[in-house]
Image 1 (cartoon, rainbow, N blue to C red):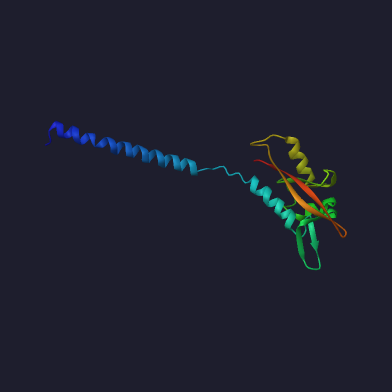
Image 2: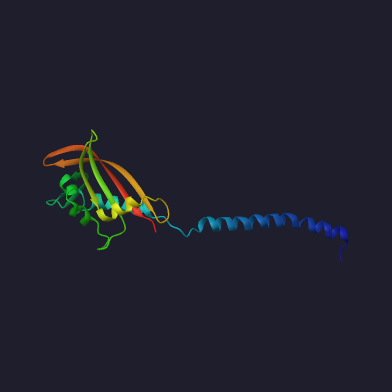
Length: 169
């Protein structure tokens, strides 16, 4: 049996062990809570994906050459913007699409509106009227792209502004 001095001295060596144990447990709890996120926000990715599908799809708004079967993503055909069926047909989310709405506006270099089209008009208007940000509301993204407009044989520099509205659930 050890004497009291020896027991006190051995107990002093437990203090660093306890401090180390507290640090390890708190770091494990911190890292677990930091990486464990049950709420995933995908609306930014969905918005970017929508823009890329709209621009790079053969049925989208970009100029499509049927002879070479090629899409020119930086060149926009104004007839595709004015034809709302082309925009709504380019990306298909199902018959009853309540998922996403977009406003596509094309301006020339003097900020004069040349063409405007709305993807999924009914949903876009409903989402924009709600106007509440956050849970149960909407998330909105605006992107400005510099483009060329194909008007018969002429190419006119312009920019396209896309406003996307996605409802949050």
